[in-house]
Image 1 (cartoon, rainbow, N blue to C red):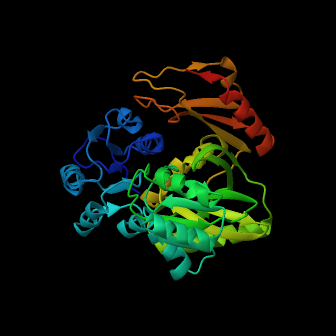
Image 2 (tube, rainbow, N blue to C red):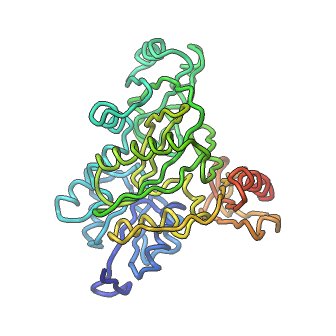
Image 3 (tube, one colour):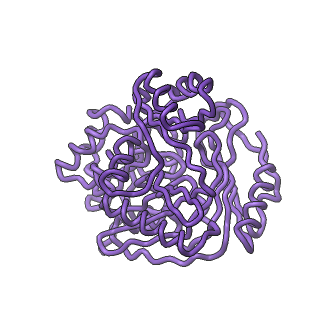
Length: 387
């Protein structure tokens, strides 16, 4: 592997399309290998903007604006870090010879719940919950009646749980219909899913390049309104369930192809594994790997993109606790209890330029003798952050 120096005529370039807290960590890992990083987002001073060599603020859904940046910068690798991007721009860039990570088809499938669910269930034959797609409230009522209550309702295009809800009875459907309009994407079509009475859910981080596929230890997590609050690693599960989870993850990532890390979300019922979703990029629940592994999910993503060996060492059980803003501010500040900075814990403040209630602004990371011990510590320490 030939490495280069940033800001030179022959520099290896990463173009990040999406510059939030996950993109920021990718940028840092890339720069550790001398890679020139260009960060793009829809708002100024996004977290990755603050550490990149150059940054742009554009309408990420505008094909012409995305392509203009790509053609200006001529990156070696284009890394989509969010869902809300013009897919037409990515297909055109790929046709022009640019390398999209993992590839434009994979991004297209995974950014749309309809595409990925049909691909996983109907083409790859993976076990999923029963589902229907609807475009009107009348169709929503009919689908919910057919699948039964409770049922899960999500926009086909969204992120971080925006627009997602659970309807537990027919009278909940009107509220779910309104919530779906909050999506960070296209809310014109919804997916209605049978509620799987699973024992727990996991994220199985799966990294692949042309030579190998590896798996991190399974990550357990707790979500609220579809957005993660706590995660821990490893999730306690049977060897049979873990092996099945790896088989499902390899099937879906092989089907999507390309290089990079994938956050494969799975439901586990006893030893049965149901496919839920997959993100072709680092996953928010995977921030726990910043403390548990010799190579975090972000380092593994960069290694995968570059085609480098993917080996790593798992250090110890750990956990993460997301801190979410409690108020609106154009100059966020944080009062942090000194106990957060312990021998087995540290804090990462993302540096988002503005806060609003519920926005993820920081994460507490902890180690423990067990995942439960680490999680209990993370839950306690995150209470030591105030605004």
